[in-house]
Image 1 (cartoon, rainbow, N blue to C red):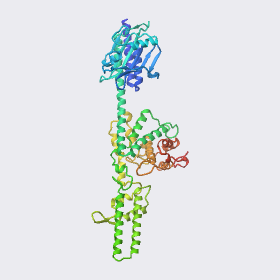
Image 2 (image 1 turned 120 degrees about the horizontal axis):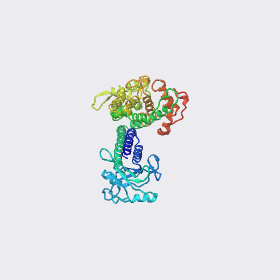
Image 3 (image 1 turned 180 degrees about the horizontal axis):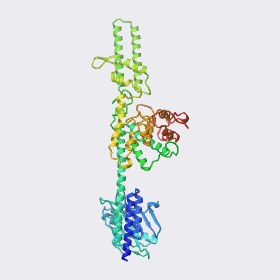
Length: 538
């Protein structure tokens, strides 16, 4: 008999060891809990068992998994069958600890409860158990209830086993003190594993929340950039999944695991985090003269001063005996010139795809007009800084401001490389920091070429450009149509800006259409003739 007991103890130790390995490598909490319950049942020969989890508010124990061999009952866990059994209150109506329920007692006091025969016990309220027995024709007898607590003493769950059975005769007997010690050890192991998984999940949620915190800050600072920070990761994942599903061509071997997907998604969310340091008047510069406000209004005021001066000069001339008709004609011509110049500067202030050299020269000629400023002194109509802004050839940014904008990617890389990323997120900085690089090495900040860039970084570069082209909420431009954006992107694939292999998948798998249907203004979604897209061969 003693030898048999030694063998059983050795078997149980083996089970604990095996379970320790499983608990250390598992990542699904529900699977871990079910495994713990089943091992506990097998270790003690129990006919049934229940695993409770505390509710979110900590006020009751909820039935998480319930198993009974004799009744063929299996609720919760991998069975998928819903557990519709009411929970066990941990506190009564007065807020006092519930001492009537054995599971609640074990949870409240952190103590195991081993009952040889529940029908002979008068300490706890087993009316629910008796109703269960009557309903199912079952006979509950021996109970072993063990709390599961973490390293801080916080309740993780309660493990309850029912009816220990003799392996040979099937007779029900009490759970032994050895059974209790092994289940307590098992419960402690399980609590540690569950706590570890919960901590990992909480850390991941904290990381995602911090990312969202950064994007909220960017969004509050610039609503246009905030929208961009949400759409780029979405489009990045659409294209990455299309590449993952590709089975032929140069990218046929590209595959992603779930960890890879999480890493890329996070990189997409953070790809412009450096813009949190970029001045708002640069990020959202809607016109060439805008700083904190649009200075075109100041120039309008100067034109009014010139108009006043012209009118005064005409009146003085008339008073001096000049021909009134000639004075009126001269004044009308001067005012028409000033109005034309004012309208021209207003249009020039808007910016566009390209400013003609003749228009730039006209700005300089207007700048040479003389006017009397607030101090009474005569000065040039436009300052050198205003001329520099109004003669910007493309868009609304000066070269200095463009450098400020471009610096956001340097800041992004610095911010992300400063973080102690875990192993499965090691490439976040590389993916996020490469979306302004070009295949021909003319991008920034590092001047990488295609061979030096990961597929993920090249994917994000396409997503970033396409979203920027189609965005309809930028203060400095209108969103382009779908066909227009694809034509520009196609030219980029030909001139070394983006990866032509990825662009081929972008078109062939109609990634652009999936994104457009969900996120673009219907007025922008025009008919696309793929045969006319530069760089694409259907």
